[in-house]
Every structure is written in structure tokens, then in C-alpha cells.
Image (cartoon, rainbow, N blue to C red; front, side):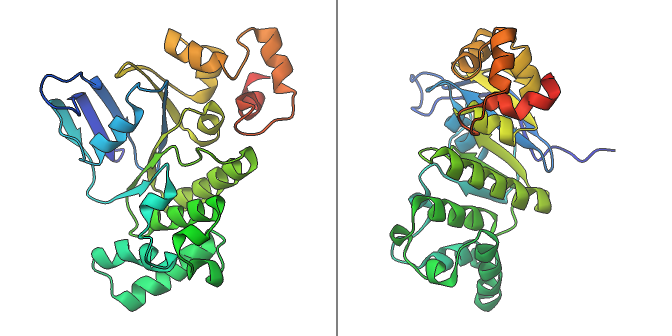
Length: 266
């Protein structure tokens, strides 16, 4: 018998502005299984971040049901928001473990190992957050997100603003760490290259509704909704001949999602 889903939404309706305001999520149903990496894509304003905030119980549900774990890690789009600016980075990484009941000495010992695993030196984890580069700070945010060993991580466009090489490096590091721990992930992005690198399944949102659920390969070769076709058209020529040419081009995770599905398409 398979393990139950880590997260399950059924028919969820959310109005962040309260009664009388527009519905941002309209009858959304989705699940995330243990260890699964689900990527939520959609145009700006489609409700992607609202889904994450709903799962984290930061927004009330007007209709429908939500089942989500108590132990959730958060990987924000703006990594400075994950840290207290007055504290050295290592203290912020220790904090979730201390709040979960670990002794300070044990928390620090584990924080050291986590920061080493994301390739930060002692000098860097003793710095204040603003002293780190953008890539270093995002790696530190990964360490903080997994510090309390959550069963689920919510990632809100954590590669936004990074250059392609740094984005790919962060994605690879994140996948390696979460896969080793069996951590489920709900990842929001507008970047289909990132989606193709991360996702076991892709969920397409449009105007607050889930309109398509697929693997990245199926989505790329056979999009079934206008919303998916619009997203793909910005990245991948939909004409099969032109798409096959794109498969042969060198490119980064953010510039060439086709490269990530080449072996399936050939």
C-alpha cells in the first residue's frame, strides 16, 4: 500500500482580500506524494504563490479542504527574508531546530554540517546575511529550509534573479539534498527550464484554476491547454522541426528547457 500524500487540496477556494474580493484560487485540487517534486507554473497573477501560502496555512480557505504537515520548510524568492539581519547566518539556520526542541549545542553541530553541505565556509556562515553574495545567500536559505527535517518544502521562485549558471547550480544542490532526505517539494516558478530540471510532475495554473497536470516531457511535446501552449511558446518552438533544432543547441537550464527532454524526444 502506497504512503498517503504529504499534501492534499480538494476544491480549494481562496480570497486573500476577504469577502467581496476576487477569488485567487478557484476550486483547486492537487496532491504531493512523499519525496515527490511538484512544480507549479503559470503566468503572473495565476495564483502560484497563493497556493504555497495556502498550504502553509497563511491564508484562510473559503471552500474545500486542505491536509498538510505541521513540519514545512520555506525557500523564499527573496532569500534575505529567511534571515534575521542582526544574526550571523549560522544562528538563523539553528533557529528552526531550536524551536523544534533541539538543544543549542546539537542544533549548532547540525547547522555546521548543513552549511558545509551547501558549500559555505566557516567565514561565510559567521557573516551577517547582507555580507553574502546572492548565490551564497540562496544556498544558506536551502540549509535553513531543511534544518528542522521537514516532510515538505515550499519553494517560491528561489532561482529568480540568478544567472543561468547559478540557477542550475542551486537546482542541482537542492535536488541532491532533498532527494537524499526523501523530502517532498512544491516549487513555484515561471521558468520552464527550471521546471524541467526539477519536476516529477508539472501543474499548470491559469486564472486561479489548475488546467493541466503532466510530466515535463508530455507537456513539452503535447500541451493540451492554451495556458500551457502560451508558456511553452516563450521557451520552445512548438513546430516539431524547429523544436528538434533547438534540442541540438547548447543552452542553460533557463534558456533551453528542450535540452532536459532531449533523450525522451529523440
